[in-house]
Image 1 (spheres, rainbow, N blue to C red):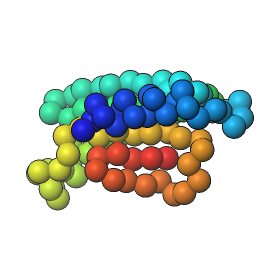
Image 2: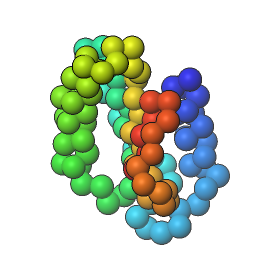
Image 3: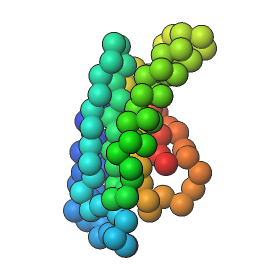
Image 4: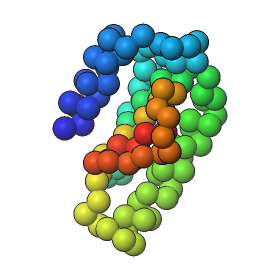
Amino acid sequence: MMKAIVLNVFITCFIVQAANANVLTLPQTKIIKEGKYTLTFINYAATLDPAWQQKMIKTFFIVYPELAKTYNKKTAKEVTFVIDTTYKGVAGTDSGRVTY
């Protein structure tokens, strides 16, 4: 499922043209594993500060395991963050994917 999502996002990059200079047509993707959790970080925002991205990643690996331990030990072990400047809604989550 995760591979299908990443592949779908990658293919979509070739179909959709950037509306402005702040949108990357090819995403920057990082896959980070710590312990039993994996975070895939897909970034379409050309202006995202790398320090801010690192802060988001660090915060995820501090907070998510604690929330999982407290509230749902069977929660997803693989999570995807998508920074999408064309997305106009509030941060949304679905099936281990968070879109900002």
